[in-house]
Image (cartoon, rainbow, N blue to C red; front, side, top):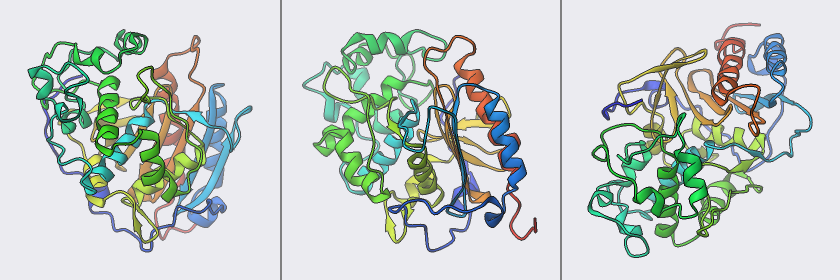
Amino acid sequence: MAALLQLAAWPALAQTPLQPPALDLAGPWIETTPDQVGLDAARLEAAAARAALQPRFRSLLVARHGRLAFERYREPATAETLFDVRSVTKSVVSLLLGIAERDAVVPSLDASIATWLAGPYQVDAGDATVTLRALTHMTSGFAWNENGGPDYNAWIRSGAHVQFLLDRPHVAPAGSVFNYNSAAVHLLGVCLERAAQQPLPEYARTRLFEPLGITDAVWEPMLEGSVNGGSGIDLTARDLLKLGQLVLQRGWSGERSVVPEAWIASATTPAFPWRVTDGAQQSVTYGGLFWVSDATPPAAFAWGYGGQFVYVVPSLDLVVVTTTEWRSLYETTPLALAEAGLGVIVEEILPAARPEGVAP
């Protein structure tokens, strides 16, 4: 999949009225019944039954109007389970970068990666053209084949997770062509922790997780002493739902701006002219480390390997989380598992949300 970078207007977050005050996410979720927040309970049960047909589904949570309205787990998973949500990690790094830009931890998204990597690593002239912005939009220009190709596993096995990518040839000018690349987002995480002068998990804990009341987060360690910024964070399903609610609330938790509104709007706006269909989800494209759809209703979502989703629908004031057991897949494929999750969300849960003012 490749396309020239082209920003486009997407009104879902930019023009959807924010209902003050924003929910204070530092506390535990307030639970309610579906009917109390305009959700069809029977349709949600149908969604859970459909999810249960896939043995690898582990959790399904729905929040509306800032209340936890539906929550199901498949054994052995529980509300305390830490789920390895793979590339949902990328969206977490996006939120951290938005915080870092606001706080001038990074001088500019147009700063070269050489600002932080030159010296300990061999950064050539082509590498120096790669900016933080290019990494955020998956337009680094490195030769890379991750979707159906061997590069992710080769990178993981390499043990030199920064230099491995820097040594790849440049096949497109930085900032021009979309090419999904987890190693590039890991590189972004390395730049961010060098800019912040503290490990990425510590920066995430103090700047993002603590304001949301998230106390349990585990990151996949890498051999070079960093953590995998492209994949492998573990969080509970309820905490994943909080991250989605934060995006829905444009970065606000109560009266505190955790992530800048402008960053949320930018990250959830399509950055490309191309659109694809993934199962039931139509009109899918990419923003700033978030997937976005300008179908009806528009949505933004973090998407992890094998069906890990944090799915945000501003026009419905709705957040959905799904997690699966993605390890040792043999009876299905990661894409089929993800499309099963999207089918549950798009075809079962979204229709369960009654428009405002419509009686049950």
